Image 1 (cartoon, rainbow, N blue to C red):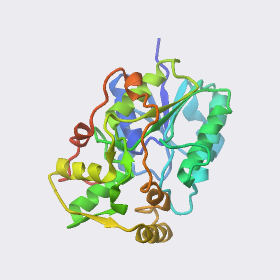
Image 2 (cartoon, rainbow, N blue to C red):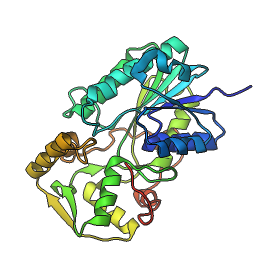
Image 3 (cartoon, rainbow, N blue to C red):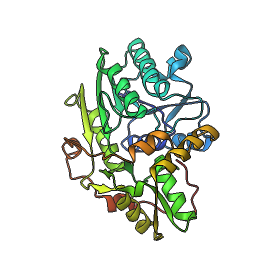
Length: 313
């Protein structure tokens, strides 16, 4: 019997391109939904993995319905902490998820895996977390099976052209600056997740009903400060630079300016806000889900190279 394809939304991004590559390597048919403005090079990478690619907007309704034909499970990756100018976090997270649920109901898709974010909760202090929570609520209020994954910062590169926005930004700064600016000195604690471990977790929850209708926090084995992560990234890249603490008022002004003048802001208001808070698991489920010890930060960062690449986020 043929295996039904997995639909990946937001497939041209960092996690999406890795997931298409990972599932294809497991002989899993993959169908990718990408936005019309997706970079052609990212789309070409998806096709090189053997994925079928459909172009369109989830909120376009019938125009993308064909991408859902024959699909039993969808992995929803649409999201950003620094959306394009003119694009709201509510539209990106909540409204896109609502459109996905509607299409899945119409086309008989039985399960959605949603990539949310660690720290998402009622009354979260940033628009990013609040709209991620609203997206989760759309799934919880639906009749579909779902799994909600809440990872901490995702790091590492195994395939494709992309890094997370934060890692891509710091890689550029490390390469181009004599000193690396870090918001408030980087004292906030995080629990980085290696991309390979996140991919294994997504594949695992797709293949079992064990975690259906659950929210799973996912963190790596190491709790480090943002400053320690950046220092480890510099070490992995072989480029040690001093770190310069950026005062919060200055970082907030820079974020506002970026959001006003840049099509995709280098740094957003919510990124500045999150830089003042710890972001670690209260109940880490990663080792349980993947059935092994997750990779340490140093091993994840060892996958990066800085020379001879175009850095994208």
